[in-house]
Length: 486
Ligand SMILES: Cc1cc2nc3c(=O)[nH]c(=O)nc-3n(C[C@H](O)[C@H](O)[C@H](O)COP(=O)(O)OP(=O)(O)OC[C@H]3O[C@@H](n4cnc5c(N)ncnc54)[C@H](O)[C@@H]3O)c2cc1C
Image (tube, rainbow, N blue to C red):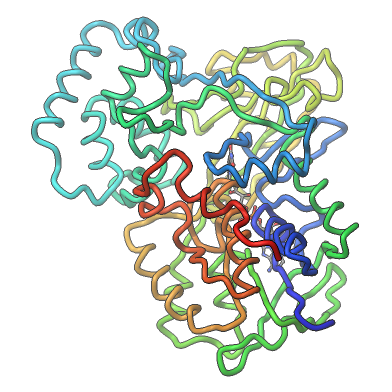
């Protein structure tokens, strides 16, 4: 390797953005990607010409610089989409964001009065210092609404009772939002809270690449390659050798099991934090290894159905809160971009299931999973089995870093230990064990790239309470607009 090169582990949004930023600074990088395509959790899968995401990926960011990067990479291929999503609960489709008459119709007068009453009760006597998701949501929305709208879906996503989920997740995910804001939004449709800040969960419009989120990262990969920063696919980093606080070399294995060793001056990793720690050689102190072993990840699979129907429902996605089915959410990819579907007379639906790798269903055959998907989708009244012309299953391990009660203690132990390295930085969603969207993952990549040329940005500060407490609409983005010309 020539002098001052950087190796980046992972070709997802964080890793590719780090390489993008390094290129801007005039530096080259090599990206090592374990998979056979780039994009990570934000990739687009192509099945017989039908494209779909792991979930549905809205491109929305309050950060000016992230928007600039997206525009720079894709320009005219970024569509502006209107959001439509609803919640299915016990036979009724609730508009989301809430619409007063629709909510009243779904709940009935008695339950609606009960919801308001329980909200008033929790406003007057809130649970002090809520530490778990259940208590946090009860404070913001009242017990009744928690039971109806939050409990079942959240427990499907996380696979654990709401009182075992850290309140951090709620405050990060539904921050600035309460029943009061929901009602005032329902009447004003402003999508802003009382302080004038945009409520992310209510965003009505977002950007979306013409051919799905993977298009962004495939074009980025190509641009980087043309500028001398290639992505090497099917290269899984297996060990990271270090001495005296410096990484000396890393080893990767390709699909044939052949080993390659790389040396560089800087190493930026977006592999999951647990794997990063367990790859270090020599191994870190026991306490750090133990903390890493305790980090957990929720896995995800999607059953994709191709249906001989031009249109099925108008939503981009529907949340399935109904407890009788395991199905958590349904994506309608055609409504994200018409080009996601190979044949215009067809519609493709992504039925999303949240699982642990150890769950029985994770190891079911594709046929059995497809059968489950079709049955459950029929049960909620959305499709007819006879309309299904093709189907497939895609699995994504470690889709969600789990925020259980002790996760932050474990992350802090690892963070302190990694802070002792001079040339190793960890970035991204699983890399920081933080529930980051693409924009936050990208920002950590920008920060890490800049740190290799002497800046002192804290990647751990991205998407934290500290960031949200900064004043002004753009907050941290102001600092991200290139301040220096390199
Ligand atoms: C269901 C779902 C819906 C989502 N919806 C949205 C949305 O609407 N909008 C949004 O902005 N974000 C969304 N996200 C979040 C978004 O997917 C992530 O923020 C983003 O992909 C994280 O980027 P990353 O680069 O940090 O990690 P990843 O996307 O996980 O990429 C990491 C990469 O590193 C590679 N890797 C791992 N280990 C190794 C190794 N040992 N050696 C080499 N390579 C390795 C992986 O193969 C992967 O390609 C969603 C996520 C999920 C699960």
